[in-house]
Every structure is written in structure tokens, then in C-alpha cells.
Image (cartoon, rainbow, N blue to C red; front, top):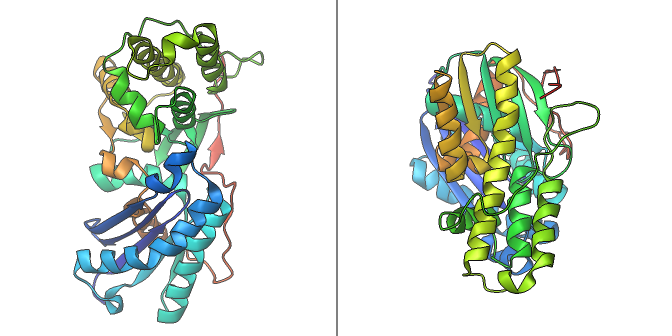
Length: 349
């Protein structure tokens, strides 16, 4: 048998993506169809619009992926698909497309956890990173800190109790009427601002847990807008740039606060950063600086593998297939799906 070819399907939120990789982990195709124009008028993702756009886009994306890889359907050996977590309507489109494809071609079907896919993207890009690795996965819907003890065992150390970091950026952008997607816009505007212009208190929990929380930072930003609405009325004003810079600095500080605390209690061989918010320039710089300071090898996914993409799903599918973990054709999406094998919550500061 020749080396297998893996096709990955990702449709958990608002990006339709299909990718193809070979058994060596070489990306042969990674096509992503964005829905930014569909959701921009609403300042955020509208679930019903997202699922309809997936239905419209997925056949075209599929054909583009095959063409980009210069392959035909007969050369695909395994189909991997995100089955959670995510938006139920969006997940249904990808799962049903994958089941139909696998059933019709008599191919193995592999069910992939979206968050574990983000972790696998780091291995796909950087190879065998030193383990155990302290791994921060930050996106629009998820914020998790893991200890990756080996390629199959992820220990959850901390997670958000409310908004995710990317969601907080999007909400700030919506409050300031900056447009969508908010995270990239806030990052760009923050380059012109003063990160010390506005003070933000770091979240704390009465039970002593070292989890994440971004709703308080969002509320503090809203208070600033209510105090002086005229100063923020002009999107090109210095006040808007300063608020973006200060808010971004606070979010990154909070993210790294938990990473630094974990470094006090866990023995690690490297630092890993992935997920859509890993595209944020300030977070990338601060995370890299932390790795340099602690003399730890530091690995961050490139932007194309940080945001939602099917290459990471194909990579996780390849890993699971080699372990003999395939799914039945009664597979259904799971909106809430844990990405960890064990829990060891951080406490204290």
C-alpha cells in the first residue's frame, strides 16, 4: 500500500476549509473560504448565516483543494472532520459532507476535536517539539492552557470562565464600531496607541483559582466609553488607539500571567502558542520574549495555521488514524467537547 493521503474538513465556526496532507505531514492543499463579508454588517458571527454559507461554499472549497493538491478523489485515503466544539449548524454541514464522502467512497472516517487540532498544528509545523510543553491555545471561542505531556496526553491547567480572549477583542471592536473581525483591527490600531493610557485590573477569583476571565476587562473598557463618549466618537482618534493598545496589553498580560504561574509549578521543556489569537502581534512578541527570558524553546504557529483551517484537522486525523481511532457513520456533532485527557487546575497567583 502506498502512503495514505488525508483530507481534512473544518467548519466549526465561520470559515469553510478543506485541506489535504500526505503521511509525512506535507500540506498539499489548505483552502479557506472566509465569511467576513457575510458577518461584517452585524459585528460578529451570526450562526444561521454561517451554516448557510458553509452549505454554499463547501462544494467549491472541496474542488479547489483537490485542484491545489493536483489530486483526484480516487487518491484520497482517509477523511477527517471537525465534530466539535463549535456552532451546531456549522458543524453539521462539515460532518454530513464528510460522512457522505467517506461512505460513498468507502473510506475511513476520523472525528477530530477542533481544539486538539490547534495543538496538532504546532506539531505539523514544527515537528517533534520538546516535551512536556506548556501550551496556550487562544481563539475567538476558546482560551485554554495545557501541559502537553506527550503527543496523546493533554492536561488542562487553566481555561476561561466567561469570554475567550478573541471574543473580548471582537466585543471591544464592536463597542468602538471598528468593524469585523475585531481582533485584527484592534491589533492594527493598537500600534498607534499608548498601552499605559488606561489602567485595567487583572482578574482574580475568590476561590483562588488561576483560571482566565475576560468579561471584567471588557466591562472596564465599556466604562471608559461611557465616561467620555465624545473622545471615542471618532474611530481615528488618539483615544481609540490608546484604548485599543491598553486593552490589548491587559489581555496579553493576563494570558501570560497564568503561563508564568504555571512555569513555577510545572517542569517544562518548551512553550507552545496556537489558535487564532496567536496572530496578535503583541501576544507573539510577548510570548517569544518570555521564552527567551526563561531559556525555553518557543514555538508559535504561523498565521495560516493559527486561524481555523483544515490542515490542522487533517494532521490530527492522521494522528488518530494511525492509532486506529476511526468513527462510525452515525457520528454527530458535539457542541461542547473537552480537549483534555486530565485536569490539574492551577491555584494561587
